[in-house]
Image (tube, rainbow, N blue to C red):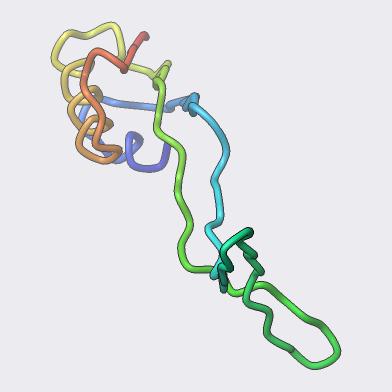
Length: 101
């Protein structure tokens, strides 16, 4: 909303972003195997009196779609500008973006 408010021809904006899922954390693991089984344990570190699993990375969800209602959104030039800004900022195709005034 803040980015769009700075764009030429766009006044106040409301934005809804729909995601495919929530974020997922991938944790470090130790594994060992024998002939009959495999054992997998999370890598744990101590932080003071607490223990935590060691995160390797965070996988962020994909954007399913974006809906924008903004002042000026009925104007074709503004609609295109808003669509291109969102597509560039989120790395999604323009057919996943709806803009209205």
